[in-house]
Amino acid sequence: MTYYGNCITNAMKCALAVVIAFSSILGRAGQLECLFVSITGVIGFELNRQVLQERIGSDAFGTFYIFTFGGFMGLILGLFLYLR
Image (cartoon, rainbow, N blue to C red; front, top):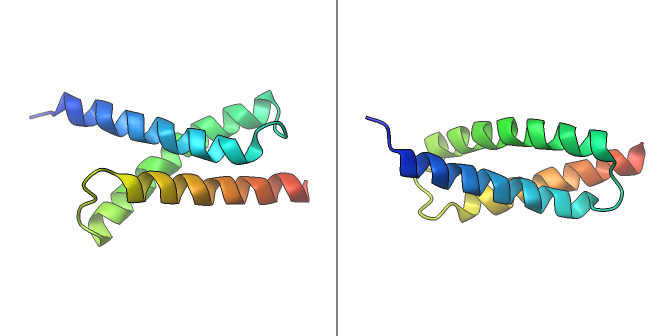
């Protein structure tokens, strides 16, 4: 049985995490970097969510998944753009 509401909710959480990551590189990244971040960000978010779900158990509203992943992804992206 598939829960479509849960899929839409997870898609919105993923989009919010990618937007948080984009906020750290806003104005410094070009179109190609934005495409790369959006593709790898979606894959990375889902892997992060699956791993944390196994380790932590449940995160009721997803704040741990969203803001932790978005913040650390933005930090790593900022460092990559700084070192480039």
